[in-house]
Image 1: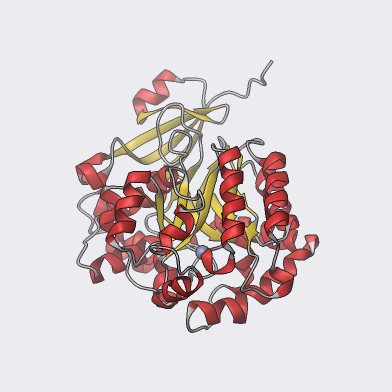
Image 2 (image 1 turned 60 degrees about the vertical axis):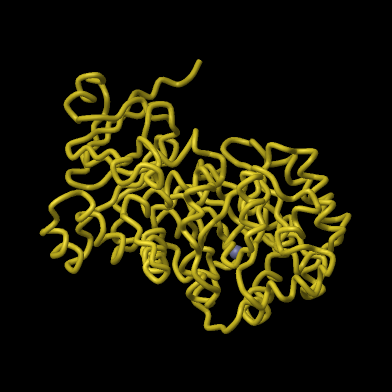
Length: 430
Ligand SMILES: [Zn+2]
């Protein structure tokens, strides 16, 4: 017998998506100015005009958020939770940044207690910023995966993570081997994949830090567990691409270093993917791969400008890339995506930005039937936003003639102060 907990109704402005704004334009979004979301047993029962939803569930508990915006929770599709404490560290190129900050910090995750501390700190920060799901890299240490999944499970989150694999071009204490990376990944996968709302992700860091043999072993593991995702980095910086060319002289291009080892198909999630050849673009589309745009990271590290036209052909998600990115906030990340789009001559409407941070990221993680939107049957992970969270935003919003004008100042200037509440699996976290 399931516990009868009764329905909840949340009142406010409700924003959801009926279709993809990259295909159908801003009218793909649905806005209900006096709306409601009814939830029960962790799932959304109904959404629509407040009067109708209240009439349908007269016994439900009411939580009235007034003029606040009720959205699907944000989904951060590419995170390095172990880099939480080194976010916003001054650096130069990617390789310098890895050597100066990332690798010394990641060494500390051999200590389970430290991994627990940072996993909990990261998740508290993510939730405070309205992020209700994430896909993270751990470190090479199995303990770092256990720490993250334990912390995510205790919060009831839908979360994705994997042990980062590196068997070359990293400090000795941060290297695994072909065999240990396969064995540890498999053991962690068997332990955590599909436990509650958790998903294991096979995670080679990127080609420069894996031998072809390690990539092949992880390709083999993915073949054995085809319903997992596989995440890695692709073509983030020009220097990095030249390095890959030196390390893999036989490969046609960067993508081929993965493709030739069984690491390209639907379910592959590539972070960055900025500098792509035509062959790579064609193969990514043929394979049905996912790309994740990390705009604050790309500008912070100076990597380049993502081509948002990929969203017309591929599953494209949005991410902070914490701590290469400079913020935990998906609002800041949307603002950076807007600015990167402007620099490329690709004007993104607020509907595109909001879609990327919710449905787009869910699709990139093949979780769009569970999270990322407000519709009956979806899991009830919601973020409630105050669209007048600071005086600067409030004075701009006051002039808004429509919902997008009301939302855009919060996208451009908002932060964790805009997050009024989050609901995870139908429960308020406040
Ligand atoms: Zn990354």
